[in-house]
Length: 531
Ligand code: FEO
Ligand code: CA
Ligand code: CA
Ligand code: CA
Image (spheres, helix red, strand yellow):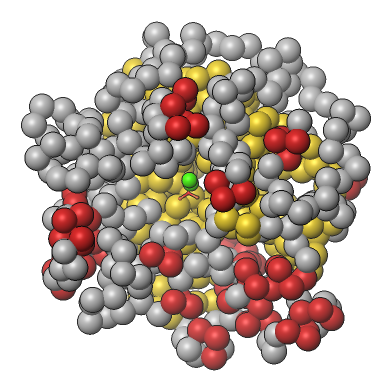
């Protein structure tokens, strides 16, 4: 059992509720409605009998007359249009996709050999890579039962690492961000969330890669990235093509994975977030302002004012990261902006719990408890990760006290490893996507799991906590960003970085999805067959 608490970094004390059998249980039974697929090393997107997929967009496809679909699609969400009556149009809307990072070999032609030889990237190669990341927004429509891309100049657009983006909130304009109110583009856009007012929040995760001398190196460019302008949550209104995205600095700067929202009874907004770095923390933000459901535009800057907390899993409490109201932080930091820009240091000083790489956080539609994926922490001997369930005191999301339990642990017994993205369907089945790093797949501790996979884990009923493999990914890929269409008959999903460990384009490890002599391409797929 001790392994189950492995998301806590060594030295943490187990809370008294570790064996949390007394916590409120979930009751609804959930049928397993598909025949699980076997672990596989096949270079294909494997689905259960009766299910099939088609591609909505893949790397390099046009999304408008001037823009193309970016690389390494991650977060995917569908935003339905509204009918004139105000009801949801189940068959038409916008798709929003994050493009997390380029693989230089396939995007700019900068090869691992070039890097090994110490060759610099050309300005043109860097520009090509900068244009391959960010967001794609485009219209999709269901016709004759099949979802398809629609070229609509009213909505379709790209945001990339060159786009103009504003800095907003408590750190904007301060010396900690070099007095800036705007910055160049967005990077590392991993997962994200949809706000209650209909905007998208996109997490800048591995922003640290680009100034380094690694294969992503953009520091040879004449336009260098300013470190403090990255590592934020970026908000964009996908329905307004002219809107300029804003980095919400009051939500803190760290390796953001995703964000999940609750509208509290008094209409304050509570948002949960995690830092996907080894030995970093879980956060929540409580807005000062109140959500106005009757006027979406009135909520546009609600994330600029409020309190940021980090979780202390030893003492079951949220620690406020505020210079005025936290004496410990006042001794070590000079301003709230300094705390927000250096969240990793502030959480350590304040006593928050270092965790084993927090990936996605989702809120159960059944009981509003919070499910958190910790993917792994190899230096701390946690190879397979776990999913925990956090229960706020009295189910009050503004409470500073909580309890928690382990919901599912990765490993050979459970059948999954390295949980990353999570998604709840309307029956509170938890869909879990694994992310064993592409260099680790089928090696050592990861051998039994074969290619990365998508699992369904019921949160109630007789199969509660058991993982059922729904899909297996192509070679080297990670599947991510899963969501359902409003009628839950189609699942949208990203297939990211197929063929990532290739060292040359002559002999790539994957040819998915076009096969033959084609190079691998990340793509967003629509999976049908759900009844
Ligand atoms: Fe980009 Fe934490 O996954
Ligand atoms: Ca992820
Ligand atoms: Ca998610
Ligand atoms: Ca991951």
